[in-house]
Length: 440
Image 1 (tube, rainbow, N blue to C red):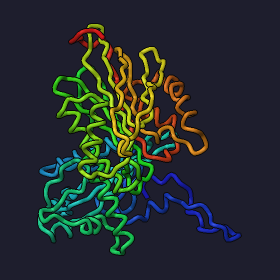
Image 2 (image 1 turned 135 degrees about the vertical axis):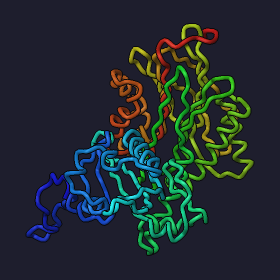
Image 3 (image 1 turned 180 degrees about the vertical axis):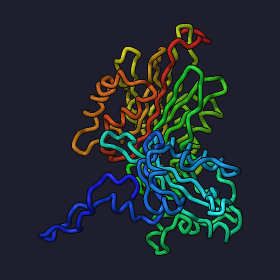
Image 4 (image 1 turned 120 degrees about the vertical axis):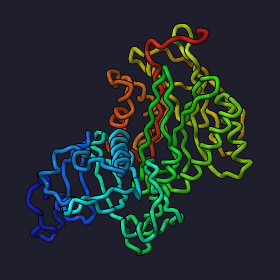
């Protein structure tokens, strides 16, 4: 077995009949699907026997080498390898599972030619006790026979979803492609997973690149088997150059909650962009629109709109909340505080608006944090207690660079995983950016 660092296989039960510890390295070795364990920099730490047989190389040719050294980009299939590498890098950075395929990557035949192969690859993060990604499990499923039987597959979109073949394969077909058994339970689990991933990848899009602002996002699910729930983030630029960021939390932890979340996120984004509404007005209009369209969803939401910089680089911030936990501002000197205000009702309860808009400001070096309540909810403590401590916990991360802040915050507050989904948005004002407007 490649890279075996463990001891001998332990017996399933001790002498007294009690269940003994499981040797998971031995389990990994006999798994039928090709699998590799990679470090965050994509060095291969281990590979199971199935992978070694598939590529017909010894462990010494795999372990300790970079992924691209083991699976080089060659010929027309090189783009598939590049997409897989980008997915692995995203998983190592964000801690979010991704699935790609079917995509083509041919294997070398003994005669020197190439054998056509189609794969579905799944990249899963392994988190350490601090909540950081310590490794990535890379799983490949050979679906060549199914793809060729159905005809050539559509090109992989490279966005981490299972791509459709031209005849619009069903979710059951996708379950079969993933190597699941055809019994009902496995089929249902695969349907949930595939649908959730498709929803998540289409909704939780990367933030825009904006000169003078660094925007970062994270999403950590509480139910990794389903992998998506009702939490979301969003960030977009208005025609006038101002930026709106959003976090929200629709009640529920299943595919239905994800679907409601997708609808509500789209409604709020469309209203805010098309009408150029401020945060409070956008929340009120989104609630009215959702009600008029028959969207039954209860949600808490926080919206902040960041203006253009003034002569001193200061940016005005207008924000509003629909029953959401308060934002946090970390100043350039490391101090932090909550943006508190009288709470407004959550969306969907029928109490209506108008909600209140509040004002703040960000100077160069300041950071705004929006988050969902999974970051601060605890079974053994009141939400108020944890919120009161939150600025101090953020201040304790004062030496953490902005691009590392969200990962550090997750490691600090939910090191062993959250009891609820967590979505976060960070907006950091770069130092020394050019000014374009009046001071605020």
